[in-house]
Image 1 (tube, one colour):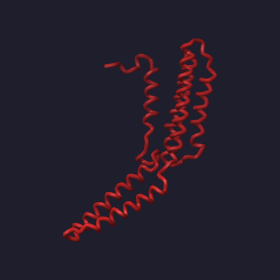
Image 2 (cartoon, one colour):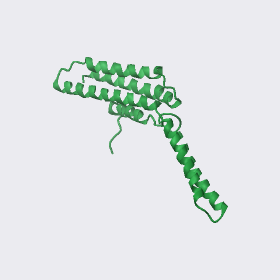
Image 3 (cartoon, one colour):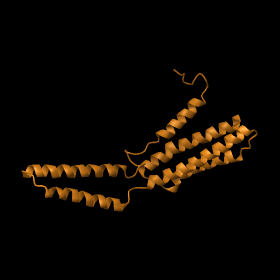
Image 4 (tube, rainbow, N blue to C red):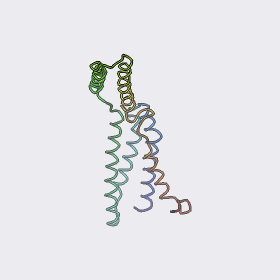
Amino acid sequence: LPAAEADEVRADVDKYIDIVVKSEWPNQQQGNLGEAVFEPGWAAVGRLSTLLAAFNPATMGQNATKAEMLRTVNELIKARRSRILAAGAHLPDVVWGILLIAGAIAVFYTYFFGAHSFGIHLSITGLIAASIALVFVLLIALDYPFRGDVSVSDEAFVNVKATMGAAHAPDEEKPKPH
């Protein structure tokens, strides 16, 4: 792209990443999923899409670049929509019910096997119950993939921003290859 358009696209992408990392991601992790949380991000993507659509290529190379960038923005929109939907999704109640019933059956099942002592039998039953409880704790922690301490991180966005910054830094600031 010509320098002016390229700078504007970079600035819009940079602004979008800032919105996602500084506003959307923290809100997702806290479970704040209202439309107002995601509106600035949608506006930034809309600006970027409009900027690219309005660009009039002067060469065949610019035309190919425009087409590829519009395709990439469309992929961004799809990924964004999927992320927002996934942020509010969790395991259905029927899954939790089935897991509870299966756990109870597994613990009850241990009573069909006689151990030589009540202590050993109690230990086996306790270990199975503890294993099932640990699985439940894991499922609870991972039930909402974008919430809480155990969640999908914003590292990919941070890495893209760092890569963009390094790619367009003046030569004296660029890391030297080894």
